Amino acid sequence: MDVNAETQVAVNSVPENGNPDCTISFSILWKAASASLKGHWGSSILACLVAMIITMAVNQIPFAVLVSGIFLFPLTVGVMLFFLRLVRSENPRVESVFEPFRQYWRMIWGYLRVFIFILLHFLLLIIPGYVALLRYSMTYYVMLDHPACTVKEAMIMSRELMYGHKWQMFGYMLLLWLIAIPVAVFTLGIGILWYAPFIHTFTAVYYEKLRQQYELKQSAVQSE
Image (cartoon, rainbow, N blue to C red; front, side, top):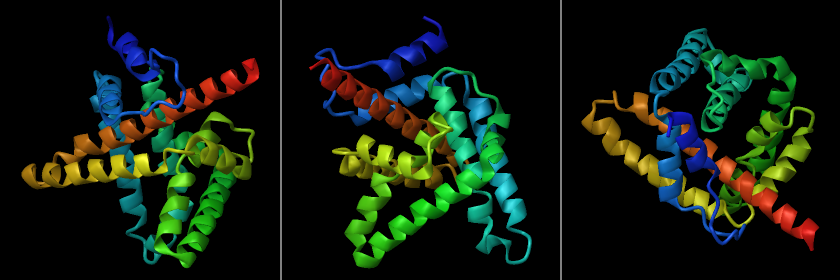
């Protein structure tokens, strides 16, 4: 089995019982992310490096660090696009990280709207803030998959995708970042060059699994 075929099997695998509400286990996501990166480590590291270098360069401009997170946000979404295409075996090019700039103001509005919603929840209490952060975490993947949808529609879809999965994702992300500590310490930071692409790939695989489960649920409802 070639690399692309192996990746597709890993990412697109669904439970044998066809239950759309089954748990998306950490081990399944880990294996699928590893399979997706096989043979693509070089371009994946380069994509992350390009985004990082551009961000660091812009931040050298006086006071730019205060606004670069907003105005360079399409670059962040571009990295997400690269790894989304990677897990779909679309052999993405590093230039993919610049594609969201074609919808620059849509991406900026997406950033601002989600940021405001999350901030308002954090003003209530810490826990509601984290719940909102998790609830809308898939908004930008939805915007990439549906270029014509509004930011509001993407946020609604993200909320539906994350229903019943918010704390699962919180646990998975926490575990990934805990793993990052020894990776950084024992490799003097060099290991992060490999681990950062893995986290991006892991998250993209998770979105794909959520999307597949959502589509299964919709199909089940329509067939009733």
